[in-house]
Amino acid sequence: MNTRVFMSKPLLTSGLRRTIGSGMNTRVWLDPWIPDIPARPAKGKITERDPHLYVDHLIDPVSKQWKLDRLQALIDPSDIPLILGIRLSRSYLSDGFSWNGTKSGNYSVKSGYWAVRDLSRPTCDHPFQGPGITPLLAQVWKLKTTRKLKHFVWQCLSGCLATNHTLFYRHIGKEKHCPRCGAEEETINHLLFECPPALQTWALSPIPSLPSSFPSHSLFSNLDFLFWRVKGMMNGEEIALIFPWILWYLWKARNSFIFENIRESPQNTLEHASQEANAWKVANSKDDIPDEGIRLPPEPLHLGPTQPECQIDGSWKINEPLSGHGWIVMNGDTPILMGLKSSRRGLSPLQAEFETLLWAMECLIADSKTNYGFASDCSELISILDNPSEWPTFAVELQLFKLLKLSFPSFYIRFIPRCNNVRADCLAKKARTRGFLFSHVSTSAPDWLSLEESLRPIT
Image (cartoon, rainbow, N blue to C red; front, side):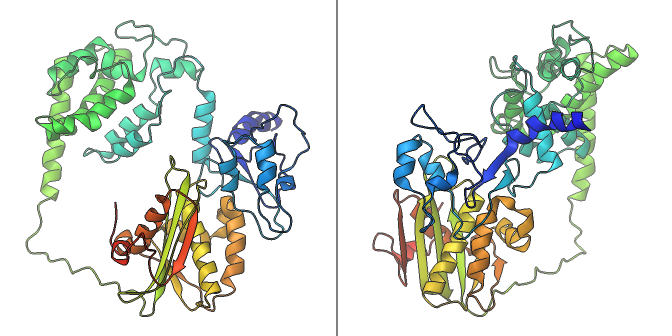
């Protein structure tokens, strides 16, 4: 048991971030409290640092605001915007921990698995090191093929395919060479794209081979080519249909050689892939033929509330220093009150959404308009409010929400589609792109943003 705890410590420390409540339990130079990826201690301007300097020393105890002069004197300038984006608790709240691998801040087995994979990758040139593969992984599940093949392609991208190279680095196998051609390492990319039988199979296929583009030495580049680049080519739909089957039958041909000593020619591999792809296409095209005798009932009409409500939205981009917040109370087509504001960019888009709700509640309380409900196109925000204990990342925001909620006799927040929230979306985006900190609350839009423009969606 002690060994397991010891082995899990690097995993936990790599993904934990200190959430700031009072700041009394978080050390500025030693604890991972800066909301960066990954979380880390603050960077200092001076070499001599007090190891017992705590975050609460940087907070004004009366105003509950950051001491800007102290930050500028001690903290590296690049860290100050990140710190100022942290919302501070207005009352005593203990510092806590949040797991960086999930939006909620709660640890999950799935996120722990991915963190372990990152920690266990060898420092040598590993075939799965490189840029993020999230778009590729997402595209896998959009392939028009069987679930089995989708899962197989996902395994290839995730580095889970049991090639000799993979087994060797996981201390399961003793050899990492290619059993078919004798190459030094049988990586997933080598097996599927570089091994001579694989190269011949792709050359015989309808997929064009392009020098230095496809097949290449990068698994990610090869799959990027197959996912997206081939769509603009002639017979793009045919290529998109057949390539998952080619990958699958290359894997099967390799296993037949290892376990049954059967050498399958590239031509046979391609023929099997083509036959299965066509059979799957025919079988599924029958399901797409509508039955003329069946008439589906129309979708029910979902009517919104009969009384005015406050629609809210946040705007956040990782490469921009500011977040935008917008809200508007409409009575039919007439705006009753609206607000737009920019603030220092927080940790995530979800935080921007939550900050928008809190600011809108504060504004309505200040204007004695607490009889309105709220509407948002962010389902995760509603999930936070329904299950606060499952979202430790937003402990400070939730504390403030509970306090503000007391001023609303019958508080509610409902989900609306994004297409029904274009007004608040426009206000939030315009506030973010304004380029400096400001806020505006009025019955009309500011001079630089016409009312007509604020009522139109923007891209």
